[in-house]
Each structure stands twice: as C-alpha cells, then as structure tokens.
Image 1 (tube, helix red, strand yellow):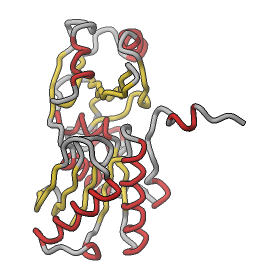
Image 2 (tube, one colour):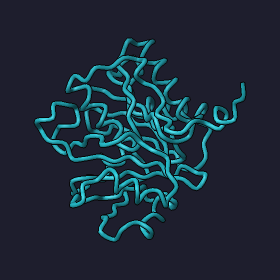
Image 3 (cartoon, one colour):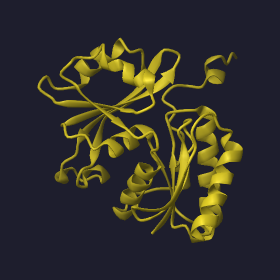
Image 4 (cartoon, helix red, strand yellow):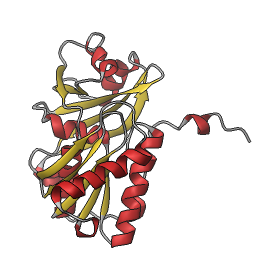
Length: 241
C-alpha cells in the first residue's frame, strides 16, 4: 500500500511517501512555513525522488491537529482534494496520538502534551489497549483514548490527571524534543510521572496509524478528515453577532 503522509500542523511538519510502514522518502520542514506553498513543493520533491505519482497513492494520511489553524486547514484541504480527485481513501490522524505512537511508552497510561500558546498546553490521555476491546487501537502496542484532548494552563494538569487516572496508574508524559513549553511541565508535575521526549518529525507515526486503521477496516469518509482544533481559533472567539 502506497501512502502519502502529511503534517502541516506545526513548524515541525513535513511529508513522506511510504510503502506500508516503510518510508520510501520524506521531507522535513523546520521553522515557520507557508504551507499553502511549502506543502506542494514537498510533495513535488517526493514525487521526483520516488517516481510515485499521486494517482498511484492508495491512502492519504494527514495530521488533523491540534496545532496551527491555518496549517491544519491547508493539509486537510490538500488531502481531501486529492482523495476526491483520485477516488482514494484519506484519513485524519491526531497529533496527540502520533506523539504516543512515536514514543512507545511502557506504562499503562500515556499523556501527550503540546505547546498551545497563550500560556496553555494541549493534552491528550491514552490507555494501553487490550486485544479484546474490539477497536482499531487494540492492535499490538496500540492505545485507546481515555478522554478527548483539552487545552489547559499548566497548573490545571495536576487536577486533570487526578480526575482521569486511577490512583495506582503508571503514567508517561510524552513531548516533542524541541517543544520547550511542554517540556517545562516536568517541574510542576508529580515526580512519579515518567517522561519521554520524542522526535519532532511525526510523519512516519502518522503514516503508521493511518495504515493500521486502513488494514483493520475502520470506516472512513472524506468528511471524516476534519480538523481537530480542541480550542476555537481567535477569529471565532472574537466573533460578535
């Protein structure tokens, strides 16, 4: 299965072409980027390096957030457009879930954290899935969502975890290597929490998660490739009737 995976949700984005879980070629983007231009430049570079044409892609996988509102929209629009044009499946993948997939925590629970700006962090809590749960997270090493992602001030994370976790649960907190805001949470959180830094580049994890969902027959439609913003954009928050 040929997969084109896209991540335009942050300054650590990129794109890659994969055969199943094997990366044939990948392009990283570090620092601020105008993805409305950069995304298509990256995809063109991938086509030149691999010889794979868009019409040959079997699955489009795209990061749907949380992250940059503009970047997310660019990635989703491209994936939806190509999927419609070539009558090919497209799947949205949470950046929070991709962080856990890339980190491979060894504890029962895992918390993915991202800088959300405005002195807040995005957080998503996951539990190691068992084979009898009957969902796409139950593959070996898979994770099930405990609660939908939230945007919190750092001091609110402790009470959030107290509400969500059993008292004896083991937990790993996962953050990108270059995400200094998320990494700074290590000081105020309980010392019993394990910490794991993972690669900034999550395109391979996005491809793997979408590939597994496709293999397991998880239902999809182009409409399901929708933005996972968690927090409304500034324009919406400032909207007045």
